[in-house]
Image (cartoon, rainbow, N blue to C red; front, side):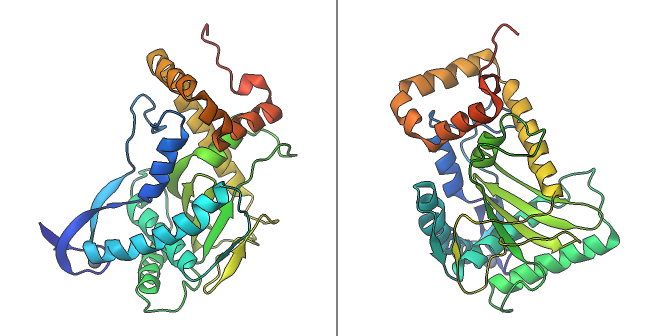
Length: 295
Ligand SMILES: [Zn+2]
């Protein structure tokens, strides 16, 4: 069936497009020790793939795929294998912008309780159009609708209190998206494991440093960075939601997960997922990961 492509606007046959890239879900499936993953909104169902919609024509889908492949092969997988000094070129900003465009398109209007000001509605329209123009090479950069990339490393100690006890597992392992902000700031948010991409819609008064993706080239490496303090609350809230969803897993599903891990115990012990569990134990104690079946 032919319909207007959400990206180029031409009437063409549309293909199913992922909101977040398929390679992230392949990584997540391989990572869970079980070869399967769960959607935290409904933890008893195995989710084989991410969200998909018939949005794009095949040409636009190919354009997005080029940036996804560059990010997967040059940043995502090398970083997880321990290469933490990575030079990038113009494809990184294109990739981040393509993710932010998709998150905005999907998440806007999903949350009925979200309250946006008139100004914020206008800015969302402008960001959507400007990101599309940048991806189509009609403008040289995203202008005020900046892209920020935060790469999370495990924290073994912190002076921030009240972190949920699954914090490291959430920060390294969860895949999620949203539009977030306040009455004075607004941004898209896409978390691909330990890589979080923010697409700025309304910057707000708080400072960002060390996270903005450059237009031409730059280097990704572990470094000090500053993000608005409200974003910590966001991560805290989403990690708590994830922990609650996982605690609702039925004992039958639990048994399946445990069996899968035991069957693959050697690979699991080597995995970076295991490392994030160890760090949560170090930070929050064994109760953070052990469950009590009697309760
Ligand atoms: Zn198209």
